[in-house]
Every structure is written in C-alpha cells, then in structure tokens.
Length: 259
Image (cartoon, rainbow, N blue to C red; front, side):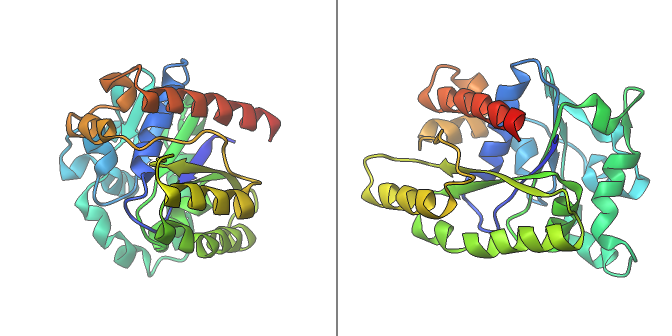
C-alpha cells in the first residue's frame, strides 16, 4: 500500500496541512514521497513554496499521459506534482470518456520518473484531494489504495463524515476493490476548548477503528509556515505541531506494517 488519498469534502479542515507535513515527516526518514495536488486552488504547491506555470501542472500531465516533466523536488525526498486552476474544467472534459473514472490511475500506472516506473520509484504517493465529492474525487479514490481523512475538531466537520465513508465504500464496490479506509486524524486540536473534547469523543465513539492516536494541535505557527512556503517541520522543527507530525509518521508506518 503506497498510494493514499487525503480527502474530506468539507474545506478548511487541515487536509493540505496534513498531506504536506506528514509527507515531510516521512521524507525526513529517508522515504521518497510524491504529493499530487489535485485541488485547483493549488495550496499544496504554495504551501511548499513552489510556483509553477499553468502548463506545468497535473492538468498538463494528464493531457500528455506522463507526469515526469512536471514533478518538482522542493525538499530532499519530498516531491510535488503541482496543480493549477485549469483543473476546474477537467470534469467537463472527462464527462464523455468511456473510462473517465480511471484517468488518474492510468496516469500513475503509465508514468515514469528517472528511468523507473512512478509507482516503483516512490515509497509513497499522497494525493491531496479537492474539498468536494466530484468526478475528480472519484478518480482519486479509484487510483488510491488507502484513504486518510482529516477531521477538524468542529461540529460541522463531524456532520459529513458518514457521507464520506459511504462514498469511499461505494467506490470500493464499484471501481476499486483494494481501496481501504486507512486512517482519520484529529486536526486543530485545542484541549482547552470543550467542543474540541466533545468532537474527539464522538470521533472515538464512531470511528475508533481508523482514528489515529496522534492529534495535531491548533497553532498559528502552521499558518505562518504556510505563508513562508514551508512545512511546519522546517519552519519550526521543535514546535509541538512538528513533534505531533513526527509522532503521526511513526504511527502511520506502524499501522502500515500491521495492515
């Protein structure tokens, strides 16, 4: 299992923050991680300080059916296939294709990097999904083996989880039998907030089977790091959020060994 979808149909739950910083924590262990930014807002790119032209993004890679020329390496062992606003029109272009749900999966299968198959070169591929349940999302879930769900510690974030879980199971039954709900991470955790505590308890009650023990604390430092185009682990390596992502990386790898 090496291709993971980071997904939640609600925006602002810390999905890109989780994708970037878990990938960075794994890369610091010497593992080669590719982030595929499939959100037209392209926040994964800006969060890593990568600025690209529109013709150097995932959209162009899909057109050319090979992503090697568009992959960047903002940090050692951490790679990025950036997004662009062009992805907004992708769904219309996919609508009339016979195998429209498999376009991204076929890109990953056909692509190479530095003389190797893409899926062989990288230890992990993390796909940062857009905040919607769309045809792009279906492509992401069809191309992935594991699903990681960030859960913001707020009531509305919890409300849509059942729909998301049903969607994942529907894709598994229809297009991708190897798809697995791999993990859920509590994001922006503030132990001083009663609502945070209540949401965490509800999550543990209903989703204990996939919930990671590690929680990611709420901190303005994360936003500061993003504004400088850095992962929090590079912006402030000893901060409590950085330490949490290091712990999450360990838990992620341990869970993978047991799966």
